[in-house]
Every structure is written in C-alpha cells, then in structure tokens.
Image 1: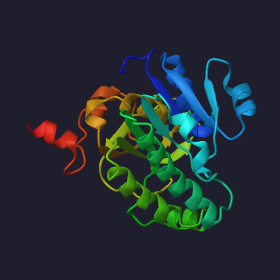
Image 2: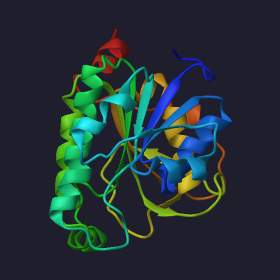
Image 3: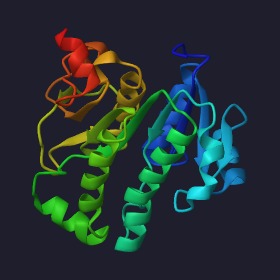
Length: 248
C-alpha cells in the first residue's frame, strides 16, 4: 500500500517532541496513523480520536507485536528522554534494545514497508557537544552507532535520518541542507523539528531514500528546493539493493 489514506504508519515515539509532529503531519496528509504508547489513555487525550493508539513499552519486547500488525511503514523516533541524566542501562534499553526488538517484531509480522529511523548528527565525528551528551545520556552515541549497523543488516528497507540540534520553530523558514557526510554535533548545525517532520514524511516513500543514511541541518537563506529535489540526490548505502537498481 503506497497511497496516503490507505497506508497505515506506526510511529514509535509519536507521543512527544518530533515524533508527535510527525504523527500529526502524517494525519494531515491522510495517512492512517498508529502510535505506540506506554500510557494509551494519556496519548489518546493528546492526539485525539483520529489516531490509533496501541499500548506498548519499548523496554518490554513482549508488548510490541500488536503495534506491528498490518502496518505499511514504521517511523522510529523514540529514545531516552533528553535534557536530564539517563543511566547507560536505560539508554541501552531504549536507544538500542528497543530498536532491535522492534525490528524483530517487524520480521515476525512479515513487515514489507520502510523503517525510518531518527538519529543525531555526530555519530562518527567527535565534538564538545557530543562528549557532553554522552555524559548526560550515558554512551548514547555508542549504542546509537551500533543500532545503525543493526538496521542496515536487518534485511528491511530502511532510511536513517541524522538530524542537527532541534529547535522549536516553524518549517520552511530556512533552506535545508541534505548531506551524506559526517557533520559534528554543534549548535551551528541546527534544524527545526517541523522541518524534520516534513523530511520523515517525504523520505518514507521516496525511492532515493531507500537504504540510505543522510543528515539534515539548516542552510543559508530561504528554502528554494522541494523535498523531491533534496532527496533526489541521495545515494544508497554501498551494496544495498537500491544501489544495484540505480546502476542497472
């Protein structure tokens, strides 16, 4: 199923922050949206009756299968909460094990859509900000780097989107730079959550985003390029099926 209005998208992390914006944008574009929530009553009150809320906890693998049934795509934005200390045990349980358990549940559900994963820039590039975040959320970059490799080797169609420092601003105020390098995590590399939400919804079915990893941050000046133009320059991971198709 590829048509909006028919496709059902599961948003893991859709009860807060960027994930909530993604869920609302998907709904605005006529997708059927399912949200995983530890507190379904609270999530339903926040989202409204137009959203399907399914009870589940990333740290409890046995609760995940109901959320994965009959979904066309999965968007994963969940992780240990930002802005406060998180032990490595919690970081591993959410930022790593929770992703792996979701991938395993997707395989058991015979999932055939795209898995779109939110990560942060700086995964491979040292910076002061990365060091500080690793101290606050213990070794989150270690676990998130490992989970990227697990996603790539999962056999699923995937897109990994690494985002800059998130700010609460409207979309389309600035140009967006889509790159496939290794930007450092630094305050100058920022982007609005609303721009990120658009990127996820657009990348979810864009052919060039299949089996690709890319970074998004604000650029200079106003937005002039469409998402189709921005994503159209992506290259898939070396050896991926999408790359093979492009070479034929």
